[in-house]
Amino acid sequence: MSETKHELSVPPDVEAHGGTEILRLFISRGAMSLSMQRAFAEPEAWGRLLGELAQQAATLFERETQASALEALADIRTALDSALDQIESGLRPKN
Image 1 (cartoon, rainbow, N blue to C red):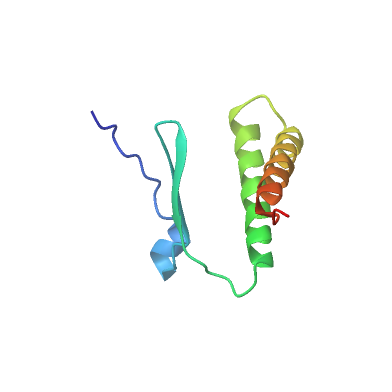
Image 2 (cartoon, helix red, strand yellow; image 1 turned 60 degrees about the vertical axis):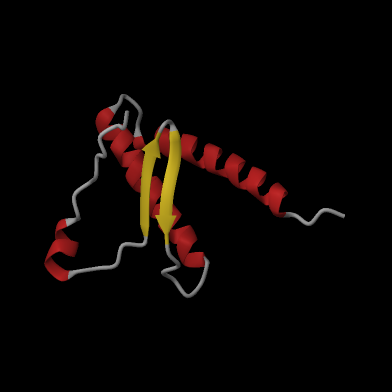
């Protein structure tokens, strides 16, 4: 049996002026499922994008829970650092 797909609305500025979708992310059966395309000339722009996502997620947690945005951002940073460390160790060449 399939679950209903829930999609977010397109942001108003994109509705008014257009734009390019670069990332689509769903949670399906408890796991992330995503599609994306390279949208930037340099990988550093993805770091800025991740920073913006972290800020917006922290603000969302502050609005919807008892956590402050700073507390939520600290938790996000800790989890991101841990995930990046794990990913980096998997990318290192094996001797």
